[in-house]
Image 1 (cartoon, rainbow over the protein chains, first blue to last red):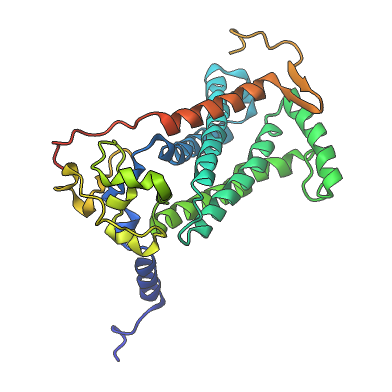
Image 2 (image 1 turned 135 degrees about the vertical axis):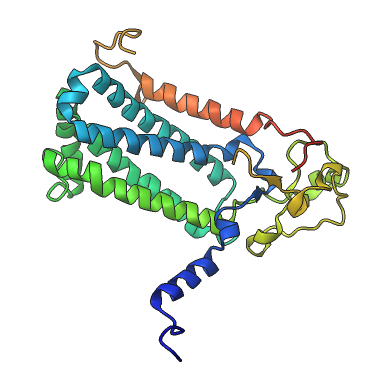
Length: 261
Length: 53
């Protein structure tokens, strides 16, 4: 075998990455039609808030506390940072509720659920260290109160809320790195496994579904996309349900184009 | 916001037996529950059926 045809570690890594997450899964051009629900919006809203948090926080860290406390534009960016954090947690909690009641760990999606949960848990101390990094009386009050909780839990010796340098390092580097890493892993796993389908209807409520439903959100039995069928826990028993007239020309058996996903 | 609401006073809290929480936190939690319910119940806008995909 010549040197040019010898398989390098970079080629092996690329092949493994493409095999684990093919481009059509990483950046799909369609999504299942059961995604047409507002409850699926909150994941991307959380992600959007995170982008605003990082952008505004980067500007704040460059300009410093004298800027964010004593200038008008500094107050503005300080407020953007704070309110984007509020929205981040607001959207993330609703996303968490929605996925919990969908049992989103179904279909070999345990790692998707766990990375999302860990991202939430890591985001809490990230916000706490932000509150104690404000450089004002509010930060002093929060740090003196929170340090008692940390001491009671036995972690105060290496997570000292009265140590501004340590808290600031945690807030602007270590914890954001962890949050972004967990969120990125979470999104890649969502792309790999696909979004969780709704629960399969069973019992008396399933019988009327045999009629063509004008429901704007078709049942998953008529819409499950082919590329993700290997991971779906819900089988696709289509014979009892005639296809919707609207699903004829669509690709992927009724999946919709990826517009507002 | 401070110009709209007078924040120069201790926070108002809700007490019920052992339960204690600031009014602002209660408002946020209730708002999250409302938005969650609306997200489940509200119909999602859809493209026209005749539109090519």
